[in-house]
Each structure stands twice: as C-alpha cells, then as structure tokens.
Image (cartoon, rainbow, N blue to C red; front, side, top):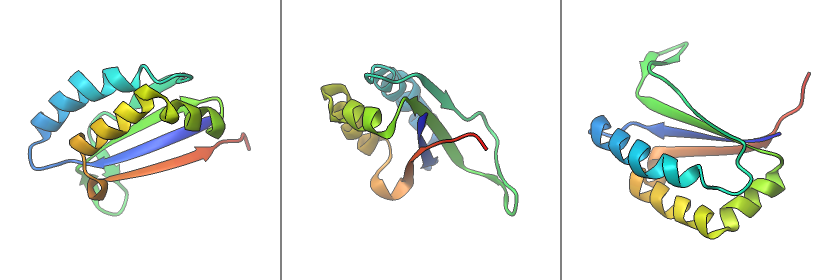
Length: 103
C-alpha cells in the first residue's frame, strides 16, 4: 500500500481554511482514480516535544506509488494540485509519498 501524507500548517483564519478544505478540496480529492481511503486528523495534533501544534494532517491511500502518480497525472489530480495551492501555498504544506510494509 502506498500513502500520501499531507501536513498543512493552519493559516491565520482556520475557519476559512476548513470551509475550503471540507467544501471544495476533500470532495475533489475523493474523486482521484485509484484512491482507496482518505483520512484526516481530528484536533488536537500533538507534538511530543511542543504540545499542541496548529496542523491538519491528511493521509491518502493507493495501491502503489505508480497508482498514485497515475492519479495525480489525471485531470482530477491536476485540479487537486491547483486547488491545494489555493488552499495552502507551497511553504505551508509538507507532502510525503511512500510505500509501506508490515514489520
């Protein structure tokens, strides 16, 4: 299973962020071809050294990194990328892509 972990720094207006995120971005992203599951964090996010931190974390699940690449090369994937930049600029987000294995 491959995962995309998206860590958003919450902006000065979290309510506006949440409106856009839940009303526009999530419904769009849930249309990605090959997406198996889309999870989001519930507040609070806790950093064990800092306490509560102002982030939202999303985890998207695909069969493989190749399936993820194919999804984001689609029209929906390109629209998600454009919308993500509207939602949170490149300096306000960290995106990690990885395969997983049981240990």
